[in-house]
Image 1 (cartoon, helix red, strand yellow):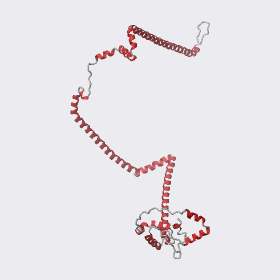
Image 2 (cartoon, rainbow, N blue to C red):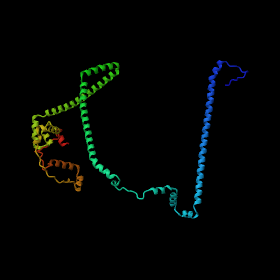
Image 3 (cartoon, one colour):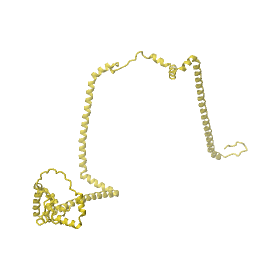
Image 4 (tube, rainbow, N blue to C red):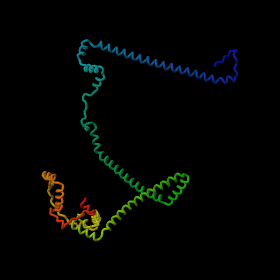
Length: 369
């Protein structure tokens, strides 16, 4: 905003000028900032252009130098040499050019000594003999010092270990005494009451924990009781079974055991109220108490018998069995049953003197199973 100082313009009051002054300042500052930004952008563009121009000039000079060198090399090389280079292999040509372009290599070769020094052993190095002499005198002292320091270190470690263990025992004893002191228990109870009064959830959690521990103890006690009950019931069952045996049955069992051994089916045939299962159970329950092992007769070892296959019927016998009528077959079976023989000794059994034994429930376990 510009103020025209001409006489025809309306004059502003001092109050209006004071109000417009900060606006004018802000406007001028914005113009200055815009101009400075434009100048900075122009300066940046100028610097970039100068850098590009400088890079291009350097590149042009480098290309000119390369061109001059190539022209000079072409002039220096005579025609005969060019012909020879064409006949030389590429790798030899490259080696020759490298030798020409590295003149510093020849200078280094001139400074190198005529004969190179080689050390095949460390003893051949200069000053090594003096070092070995010093080591012979200094080595024993060094070993003694190292051993002494090691012994001192081990002794320090041992002392610190013993001292720490004694202090730890004293500390544990004191802490145990303090934990079990009535003063501490009373103080813990008092503090617990104070905290539980301030924080009721702490009391609730403590009671739940105590209740769960109590339930665990009760359940474990119940399991122990169940195991005891199972053991006691088994003992009662065994005692009732042994009480069912009379003295006469016990003596008879012992006599038959001495006569036939562990032939429980034979023993059960002499005991009317007992089965084979009862005889087996009674034997193993009273085995150590009655010392049945001494009563049983010892068997002599028998030689192994050769296997004899069973006698099978011939085709003629099968044909005769099919041709014989059913009535004749039943009569033959009845006559065969009358002329029965023993399975072991193959002797004829007389039914008048030995009528046999009827298969009842008591002796079914011997013959049926």
